[in-house]
Image (cartoon, rainbow, N blue to C red; front, side, top):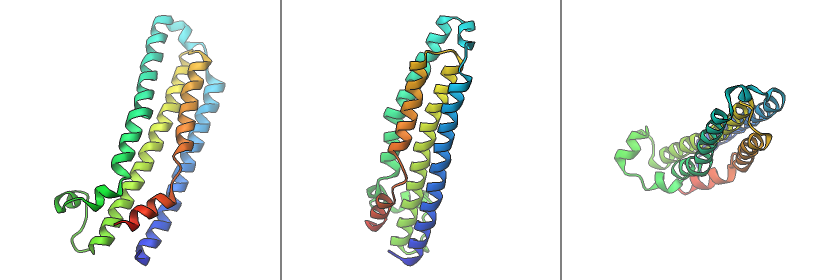
Length: 172
């Protein structure tokens, strides 16, 4: 790999690790807030409203973690997509024709990899926030715990992969 790309990769991985740490701290803060702030607000709204709110949040959380996260990671983290992309698609991704093709494709892949990681982590953190909202609505602790556990598990399952991005860039 080009020495410039090695340096860019090292800096990008450090940034990704910092972003990942912030997302983990955010999820931990949401878990603590759900434990501390979870209250009877949902009991005032009535069980029907609470049931629909729990169902809507549960469906949205399940779709995000089971469908959107895997699809976004498949589209953004796939090195073959960048390697096999035509000139028009590469131009739409911001690939400059003045840069050597291999280096430019590596830069595009690194950008897409970064975006895929951040999007996945953000979606996982949003499910933790759904758990906090469910807790504030007075949901059963098992419902709140399911949201929080799913979010934390997903976040811990998807750390920044230095080996994965390096292998992807070397395939360009």
